[in-house]
Amino acid sequence: MASAIKIGVIGCARILNAHLRGFKILQEAGHEDLFQITSLCARKEEDALRFRRRGEGPPPRPNPIETPGDPLNAPHTYIDDLHAGFSADIYTDYREMLKSGDIDAVVIYTGHDSHHSIAIDAMRAGKDVAVEKAMAITVKAAQAMCEVADETGRVLSVDENVHFGAGTVASRWAVQQGLIGDVQMVYRGGIGFPSHRPDLATARTAWRHSKLGSGGGVSIDLGVHLFNGIRTICGPVVSVSASWQILESVRVLLTDDNSAVAEEIPNEVDDAFFANFRLESGGQGHAAVARSAHGRRIGVPGGTNIFGTRGALSDGNCYSDDGSTGSIVGKFKSEAPEAYATAFPSGVTDAYALEQLDFLMSIRDQREPKMNGVEGTIDLALAYAILESGLLGREVTLEEVLDGDADGYQKSINDHYAL
Image 1 (tube, rainbow, N blue to C red):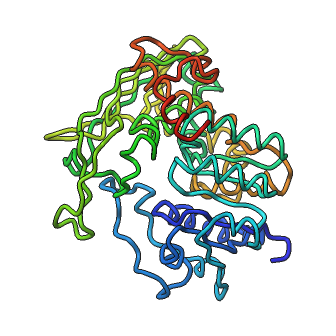
Image 2: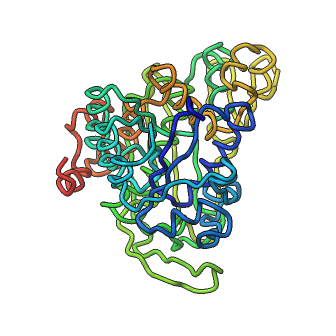
């Protein structure tokens, strides 16, 4: 393992399982010599021990979210599953890991509020960095991270799994090939979660409902995914006009067996938004997303629906005006086999594995990652444009948010973190 990139994990929360599964997939695809996870850091030692070796720490946490198949519900994985017999170092202070840990790079899976400070400290300590989406607590925080990446020459990558998903990659190819003509409209929406309990704390994580902990609610947590997918497939988004609300002022945490309310949490962030947006190409779109809905859950059929001058992309299929229909991924694989093989090297299609592979190869080849800090900042700025537009009651451009001319919502957060 002498040539392997040595990785320190900072943050041992529930999303770590999805990332460890991705690393395991890379090993099974022949990339076992590319990396080694050497250290785990969590504020509580028991949280790090939970992931080191079977039987060593506390038992796995229960599935945290109501949505089946969500990455947060990935099966529990141990470092020992990846590196049999190896005992990763344990830290409770990331600064000590950066100072004395046997690491070349760090992956940051903490809450939004600490992404910028940890990433900046890591890059200044000479470490390459990958950070979970949303990239930072505010746009200013994300821009500060980019500045330090430029100053230090370290790799700064954002773990945005939507960017690497097979449907996203194939849809981008379909649009670029003109299979549906020029993009005219994009439409997506989903109201409510499967549990039909609008007061449930999403993923059992209290920080998601704090403005200083998460920045925003569903607009930030899911908005960055939404805009990354749309930008990747359809090209730049230039403006957003939106409204948002806090529908549930109190949320609850349930006991591990879901039998009772363990804690009530004040909700400070949006749990519903309705957004119109404009594409640089001239197309337009609408997205409606809410975590809170009484009675039932509904969703716009087809996922992200993209309508062009000669057809549409919907529900994983390409519908052409000539009457032909087919799987977008299937068409990509059969009609552009070389491009497909490049997008999914060694047959790997897991988005978490692909984002990790891109990060590792960026370090190895000394190149920019596909999801670099600039891209992550744009996604975050568009997500915050939802909140800034709702506050101002008008359309907000991406430029306004990036330049800080529309930052009324973010101002209190920036002031708190001295950004």
